[in-house]
Amino acid sequence: VVATCRKLFIAKNSDYGSAWLDMRPESITDIIGYKQQRAKRMEELRNQGKNPKVSEGVGSEFMDIFNYSIFELILLGLQGMGPFGYFKEQFDNLRSNNGKSDTIR
Image (cartoon, rainbow, N blue to C red; front, top):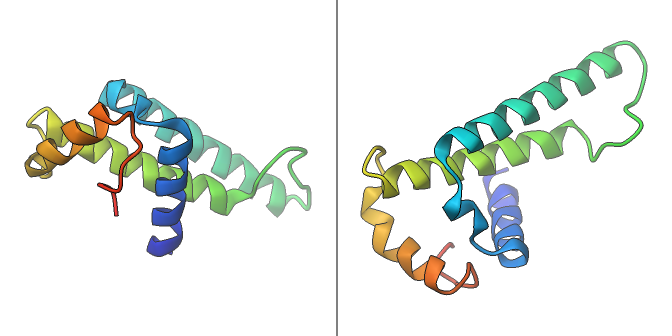
């Protein structure tokens, strides 16, 4: 599961760059909440015997929650508020390369 999420994280970071580094942690918290609500709604529909009209599936939502949680932990660390502040140099390098880096492995 972690390897799949990591692969998705790297692919999306390669596609979208480091735009998430400019987000506020509160914004990412909002996105995580939205993803959780979507997952819950999909589960409710499934329990009613219905399928969402447009969806990559509930698993995709949880993988996004996992990765957005990683983003938020990194941002908190960069602000000195989390346990990962010691990665600041790597992520400053990532930002300077517009997210196109092998830094995240």
